Length: 209
Ligand code: HEC
Ligand code: HEC
Image (cartoon, rainbow, N blue to C red; front, side):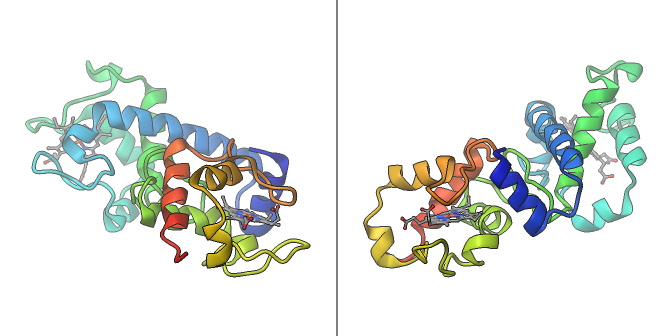
């Protein structure tokens, strides 16, 4: 994450210490990869549940379950069901550290105001959807541009969602702008996953032009 972006996050939205955010985000990222490999086949890509297994991204479920209980459930499984014991201590394949990453990822579905995971936003939307892009915009961009991109910014008082400006920019221009910023705008390439960039693109493309 560039310094400008980091300062922005801290000043505008930062409710956690920067170091904690970075460490947490790394755990969430690793947990997302593990979840996609081992869990999503039954619980769904975003923990939304399938015919095989219950929903996990339910705020009520998450509010009622402690990290310890989540860890224990994943490690020990539920005997007599398709939920196997995943912990190495119980004959499974995952280390305690990996289970910790999974818990961090599952938890990330209930926090609307910390940096987002890789494939899903914190509220469980696909990061590369219009809705996911809007959520990323609210988190990363709205502090300067306003919630819908309509606030004039910079010395030239540029309005990001102005149709006449949008018409002048190709998709490549927009992507470049998100990744590398502009003369007065920080770049976000280091702070966003490819799926988040795709979602932002879809959201910006949905604006009237
Ligand atoms: C083969 C299908 C399958 C896979 C793969 C699977 N689960 Fe499950 N999981 C289930 C089922 C079925 C249940 C419900 C068990 C029961 O009835 O108590 C469950 C329950 C759970 C619960 C408790 C939910 C609750 O409502 O109490 C958690 C947490 C969980 N799984 C996490 C995971 C994680 C993390 C992984 C990946 C490491 C995973 N599961 C992989 C089938 C699966
Ligand atoms: C720290 C403030 C700040 C943040 C955060 C920010 N921008 Fe900007 N943005 C600017 C400024 C200032 C300009 C105009 C000057 C420039 O080009 O640098 C701008 C211009 C733009 C433009 C208009 C380009 C044009 O020429 O019409 C778009 C589109 C845009 N930003 C998108 C985004 C997106 C998407 C994000 C989030 C990933 C974002 N911005 C985050 C400050 C910001």
